[in-house]
Picture 1 (tube, rainbow, N blue to C red):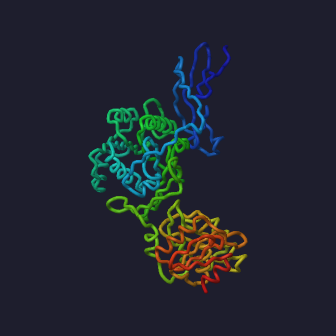
Picture 2: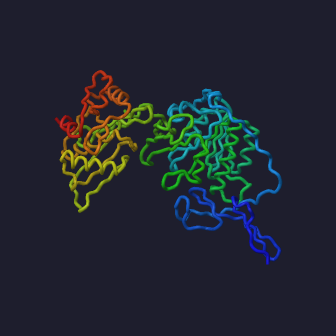
Picture 3: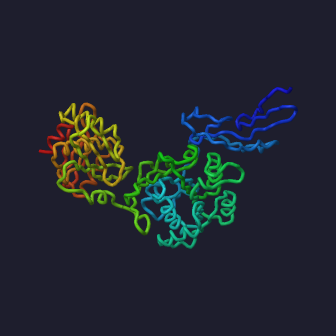
Length: 473
């Protein structure tokens, strides 16, 4: 009997078993849906990403025998000899979207847009493609809806775009053939999880299909200078579904954030090779589509209650844009053995830390109190500059003493109760002065070389206790 042996091509996991003089080839493998790890057999837990029940069976192609085409040899050049040029950008006609992209769409860029179902991804993309079509033909591939459904949405959005073409197709080869014939400048795929290639036998949305379709679209975008936009589904955890390599392949990854019960939407860039990842765009969902919010501070403070304890205004910095948001706190005596700690828009661990600082360094009794914290408007705050505002809101609610209406608070709080300096204070106080605030509590370390805006009184504090004494004096 001929002994069992493996074909040397282990990278593709194709094994050949010789039995009774006949060859049997296994053309299936198992692929991790999270990280793309490949295994010749099903496994309960991925040894790479440590996720459970994430392997799916996938059919693979046998290697083609014969000589492969020689690779093109690139000659290494010195970094100083590389010609640097400024990328030309095309405006989307939506200033908030241009801000997130870094000034507009770069020719040949490859972008991915993700978000929860129904949050407005297709609406925003259709509006952007209609505006971009004024600079050249644009092709919108709708793989989830019919062309009639997209037409109805376009009528609701009052889209007028003679050079915007619709294609209801799920086959990648057919899409690429239409691209070769039409030669558009902009291409949108809605969505990448529903497009498949006939060269693979796996189902649409599988790891191999998403990876292969994205790779071919990327080569086309870079080779022809075709600006391409992909819409991606998200998992229950909020991450983009499919292989993680998808986010590595694209130039820009945008996430649409928001609540279905809240009309406001925030577009955030988590990866951008042509701009900053700190910029955000603010939109409001209306009957006629997504409307830009050029002044988010006024919007988030429009419904702020007056004379209520626990309400504090904080200047958050998103990229180069300062946004004033309202922070609401409710502190009440706990009816249970273990007090509750609930927060929306702020990390719960940060609240626990600040509660301990107020208890130890300031002397406020909070161990037997239920604490509820919320950022109005559905905004998420993750910078340390909000620490001082959180402490002020907690103290205000505990003592039932309102913070003066036109007062702004910001600064980072250390474990010793000290208030540390933060970045870009001039943008924060400038936004406060523009909206009519007259008092601002900030770290003492930020007073150096800080120009005081007209009509705004600054209070520099060293620690949390000093801030609370002056705030409620």
